[in-house]
Length: 395
Ligand code: SF4
Ligand code: SF4
Image (tube, rainbow, N blue to C red):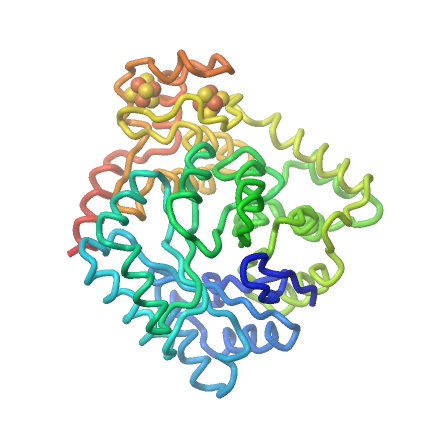
């Protein structure tokens, strides 16, 4: 396994981390035996970073069961889980969520604790108003939290201010060759590196879309790169080619995937992509991008929208729905709409004031395109459903 140094703590982390969200399941129930085989094989191959979250149904408990079946396993890994913002209305809620995670995971501490899916400065301000900063300090002193970070799905221009809003130990961003200008993107990766923060990458394969659902022409470009013909290997190697990436998470749900990704990680050193491979990725990107409908670069000049619409993320999801399928677009749309932070805003919240369009260097007719986003990605009644769900969860 290749290990990379956490620039802040000096810890050595495996370049490949195991995303536990996709543990094998049968009829909606996690298969503990199959999941245990994956975790043990991952650790055997040198993976020392496991990622889960409070809201991944049954996931923390499954991992806790695997730890309890295998004495000594817990101490071999850096365990990451995440705080669910919609459940946190008071400082006591923060403590209750952490306690619940520790109980499920059958451990007394989390090595990497993340605020889950911060999508805006407003989400951070709400958290800060609960006394988050003092709370974290106290939990660190009590040894219940090792390092504190956040996962991010907001617009590019709000990422750097969030990095500076608190004394974070690490951050987690969505990053892959199609998302250089989406959410934190390459600029966000550089901002984190400038601040000496380790970066955990999620979605290096865009939820598997860069593995199995590439347009035919894009796949042909990758196949033509003789040194590495497999789209999965090339997409992962593109991520690890960036020295600022510390760990790339992959939700591996079979031993075969694990073996292939671990082998790839072994050799995927920073700056090791050949020029032929880099060119193949570039051409594949161009083919995927040519299916995009809105020429949004994700610059964020149109933000903030006074009605909270996350404009670049709406267009990112809309474009993804043409390149990678409508379901992928809808998933991306729901995530980026802030549903998990209890502060959801949708394309339908646009009142067509036009302020954003005047600031757009691409001259996109933003209100008109947002209507198209709503028609394609927003099932009728979604905002009301999400707001109701958030109210129920937060009780
Ligand atoms: S036109 Fe719509 S998206 Fe643009 S700023 Fe006004 S309300 Fe927000
Ligand atoms: S200003 Fe235009 S190009 Fe930039 S993020 Fe907004 S819509 Fe996209």
